[in-house]
Image (cartoon, rainbow, N blue to C red; front, side, top):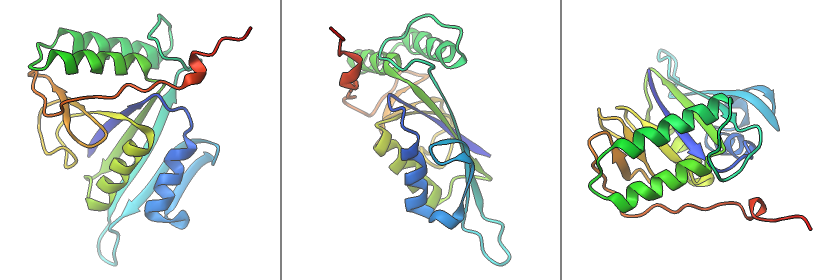
Length: 188
């Protein structure tokens, strides 16, 4: 089994379902829950007469109150984001500016999307996950898998460029940190 996790500021998970349907068709997608409030999405790619195919399963969790700052909370996703922040902060990076941008991006994350592929990501599943990352302006955390062709843990941008691995290496040169304007609006 291979996996990766996407982290995004986006909270509209209908975009994930739309992306999967665009890749695999409505009939190939099994949704647990309702379209606007799903719990799990499952699809099988590469299934043939004598071939089992590769299964992709997607789940997510979100902040109870979306925002753009990483504050203290008992929420599991917030606790995980704090651990990620501390992990990235302690890595000695070749590109310190990129590392700082990654730390800024982590603070803005509202949604964590776990993607599991069994037995592995094939070409169809990889393409769907990369398109989903584009749609959500997401970053990845992953260990070795077919998507990133590495055995080292690290963070990748939505295009598949390495932002930072555990050894401080990177191939990306920049990381945009976009925040929804509604979080800055103040009621008078």
